[in-house]
Image (cartoon, rainbow, N blue to C red; front, side, top):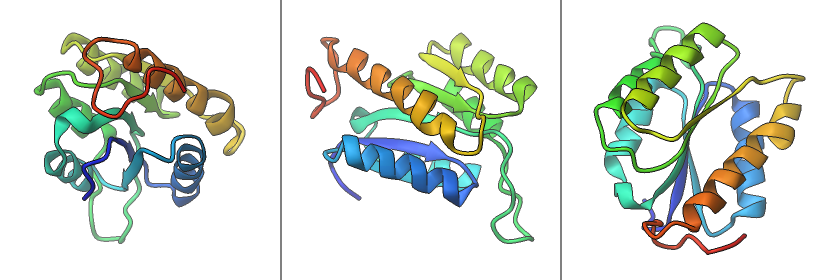
Length: 156
């Protein structure tokens, strides 16, 4: 994998993932967008990357099996694991499951992570209208701190 800075996205919906990755690659081509469709593969992805190059995380909660026999876990599995790690970047929770999203947010807030929740709506419209502006703001805010990750420009 790349030594470039990256944004990690957990979601089981290929259309959502494609729209998110497309938006990020269009606006932030210097960053890698890495995706996973199960909690286990997402955590393996996190473990494989240097944490100082992680710019943002975006998590869905309810995950459908990619292959009918494999339990993909949930975003809560990931939030619990992240809560045991040092907070290194902003986390966006993008889930229609409000109760689970609140639990994920609580896990991460208690551990000191910068967290925001987004409620998906209107098919994929929320990605351009809400998700991307939120992730952009978090990246800009992170780029203006003295502890910014390598490669984050001061302005976008």
